[in-house]
Amino acid sequence: MKHFCRQASRLESDAFERKLAPGERLRLQFHLLFCSACRHYRRDLQMMQHIFQLIRTQPEHLDQGMSEEDRAHILDALKRISAE
Image (tube, rainbow, N blue to C red):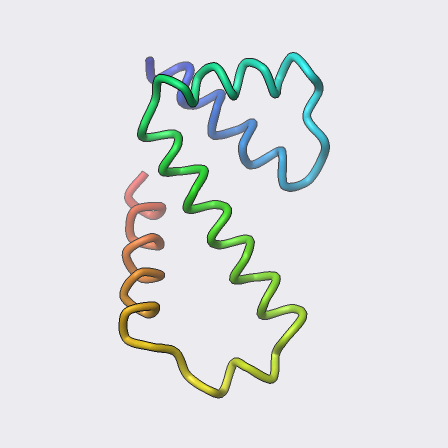
């Protein structure tokens, strides 16, 4: 299964930079049906993309701080990613 997870994570990352081919999208979606680890990875990537987009488009909100809950959630996600 590790081989498929490696391919899925590469496709997930690629999807942020380019449009996946239909066959790539199909393979990724099929894998995600059965692999909760890759679904979590996808969710974390999407969350990071959302955060980076907010930073890019609304930098004025950076100095307003964030809730401890949001800070903990981001820290947990970053720890999971760095552990992989």
